[in-house]
Length: 293
Image 1: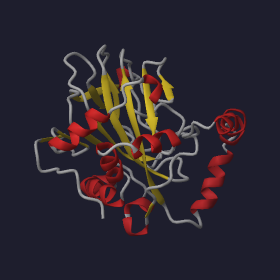
Image 2 (image 1 turned 180 degrees about the vertical axis):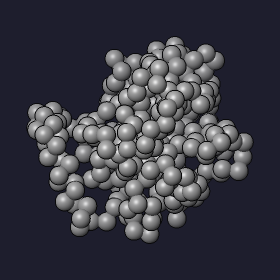
Image 3 (image 1 turned 45 degrees about the vertical axis):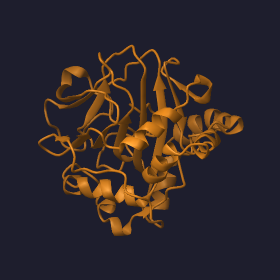
Image 4 (image 1 turned 135 degrees about the vertical axis):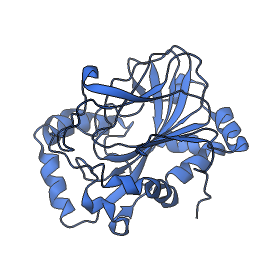
């Protein structure tokens, strides 16, 4: 059994509907010191480039990620915990009371019927050249564009138990970037971030909800700023954990910044699912949209 690393009894802040949780000093002093000392300093150590090169990442499920983790102590301890069933259940239990109200599908509410797989990842998470070519020229333009994947997943769900799995990435930005207002990919149920830097100006995580509450089935993935109200603004500070349910009416983005910003992103997603929350809004490219914060 993996040693429990998170403690939700320390300094924390809840929104009044318990949609999110923010905790300072989430990791013990020695562990956060190890992680900071082990953090890659070379941009070439991050094979995934995004947001015009301003943010780079190292992603769980790639050979580069495994090689990096094998050489560390602090990161390995944290990744082993985040990818464990114990961690997933601990976090899910905290949000369970809100899950049904927020629109989580009934088949995922009974965790006794949900399988946990800490060793799988997204099909599209890869650094392999040939797999990238396949994804670009076949998987995306045919399998996904024409919604073949959706029908295939529906078939699988009739015979296979729901499976939840972790997604983890180590992220760094040297020059800043601006994350647009969004909901993460719809098959992700819970999202977490562990910030590693104190940012004096900008870089806050901003949380929003729609001004006019519609039914759970009608929320767009990318709303207009004029249609939402800000409900919280969370400052990026070293060793801070932020957790939230990726529900239909819980939007988030970041404010501009220019300093270094390092963080660990993780989420728990359901395999072969277009959307784990009830929605009739079309979800065709849910696992290919920008999703880390």
